[in-house]
Length: 227
Image (tube, rainbow, N blue to C red; front, side):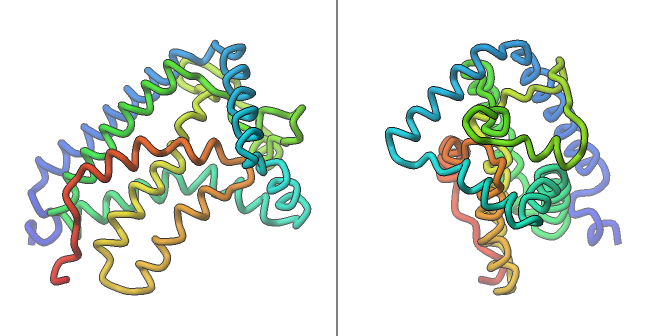
């Protein structure tokens, strides 16, 4: 019975929980070291906007204006921003551990490396997210949705938009899950999940997830059992 519920026993499960919790809090603590660099964060954000304008891909304000105008797309996006990042990530990792255990350790290592690389980006290039650039036509839909405007502190760094780990986590879950899923409907849902996260009206810089995907591509391919 134990082997059916816990593929490698309780000790291994406890170790994975401790490892993830420790890595997550270390991630938050290190990321919070740049919470007071607001001037640099806004300067970097405007530099990215200038680059997007040069490349003719600066379309976020128009997307947000459309979403707000629908009356519901923006609220759905705000709810997803606040809830799915943690809930979907945690539940999916638990599913992989319990039911696709032979693949879990690769996915775990991918997350660890990606978070480490993301911290380098946050420390070296703190960047304000688009929703904080009101003078460029953006509104802070998350604060409007919750009625709360959290202040930067040692455990909360709002200037962590490069790379966008909301999008990065979505990709790092979706790619292996598409490969591991046994049902076509599940593959289809996971295939669109990163796009849904990426197209949030208040999304951070979605194209800054190249590093996590490079980390993924360095790994060995996954196949669904029995495929």
